[in-house]
Length: 324
Image 1 (cartoon, rainbow, N blue to C red):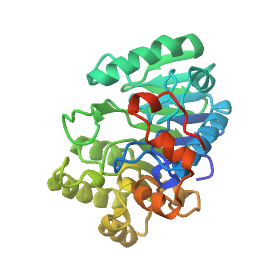
Image 2 (cartoon, rainbow, N blue to C red):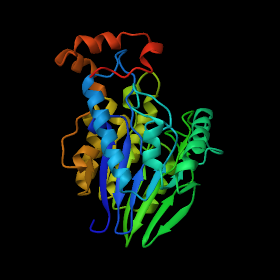
Image 3 (cartoon, rainbow, N blue to C red):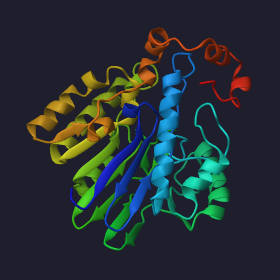
Image 4 (cartoon, helix red, strand yellow):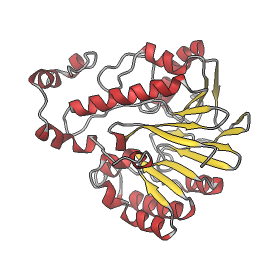
C-alpha cells in the first residue's frame, strides 16, 4: 500500500506476548495496543533470551510512541497496554514508562464500564485514573469513528475474546483507512471463532488484516477441539477474501503452529493471497521463544546467578528484576 504502512513492533513471532503494531498514514501514526509481556510456561521462568526480546520490544514501542499521535487499547490484558505499575518480571513496566507512552496522545480505549469482565474493569479504571492526567485526550472508542485529516480510525462494537461469552471478556477491532487503503487490526479474536467477528472482518474488506490466531497450546485441556475446527474454517474463509493476512499471537505459543496453519496456507495460495506471521511481514523469519522455553534452557543454559534468581519464591521474584 502506498499511503498506509504497517510495522509490527512486538508479537510472538518476535519472541514476546503482544500484538503491538504501528500504522502510519500521511496524516498521522497510530500505535495499536502498546503493551508487551512474557508468560508462565512449563513451570520455568522465561529464559534470558525472552527477557532480551522483551527489552528490545519495549524499546521499539517507546520509540514508536514518540512519533505517534494516537495510541489505542483494544482491551485491558497486560500484553495489550502498558499499565502504570512496576513489574520487572513479566512486563518490564513502570509508571514512568506508561506516562512516556501515553503522555500528550489521543488515547482511544475499550470502555471499562460495559462489555468487560471483572479483572479488566478494575485494570481499565486504574489506567484511566493515571492516564487522564497525561493524555491530551482519553476517550472510550467502542463503536466509534474518528477522522484525522483524510485518515479514518474506526472501532467495532466489542466482540468476544475468542468464543461467544468467553470468560476472557471482549475486545475492539480497529480499522485505519486512508484514500481507499485499509488495515484491520483484530487482536485476541483467537481465530476468529465468533461468527460476528468473521462478519465484521469480511464486511470491512481490508487490504491487510492483522489477527490473533487460536490458542492451540491449550488444546486438549482448556479448549475443546471443536473450537479449533471453527477457527480453521473461519481462517480459510478470511484468507480467501483478503489479500494479506497476518496471523500471530496465541497460535505461536505452540511449536506446531506452522503445521496447524497448513490448510489455511493452502487456501491463501489458491486465492493468490499472502498468509504471514508478523515477523514475515517485516521480511524476517518467525522466531517464537515461549514455545521453545524448555529447549532454550537445555541449548543455552543460563548463568548461575540467573538460575538462582529463577528458583526464588514467587513473592521474592515479583519485584526483583532478573539478573541478565
